[in-house]
Image (cartoon, rainbow, N blue to C red; front, side):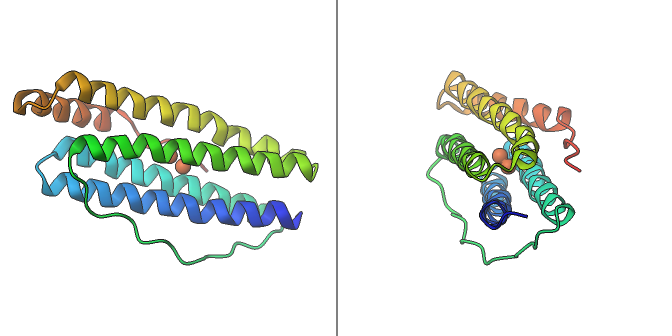
Length: 170
Ligand SMILES: [Fe+2]
Ligand SMILES: [Fe+2]
């Protein structure tokens, strides 16, 4: 496997695991602050990010590359509000989209068309994840900063978490 592509994929394996732990941390914050539905939604999201990591691990192995497990950055543990949590979810997903695009560029430079084809799944997934994060932020804006509004927002997220079965990434 091309060494630049292999290094980029290993970097993304680390990034997906970090995303998982960030959402896990956000879920714990929501749980602690009484947002049970938001916690469930973010725990599910954390599991999805883990699946993204595992799919990459399998791909690197299949192509004869070496998976390198690196140390992870410490995720943030405190937020000022539920709005701050979900604002960061969208910002984080946009950052990840940029990372996937960068790997795609490396594949083009190295003429690794198989990996660029494999990455299409991640590109599509980022479209969905950004759209989902925007949708949650819209709901939060509609709810306003009132107890009643936030109660309904959280119930809605509980329903969304229940409806979204974890997508098989393998
Ligand atoms: Fe991901
Ligand atoms: Fe994501």
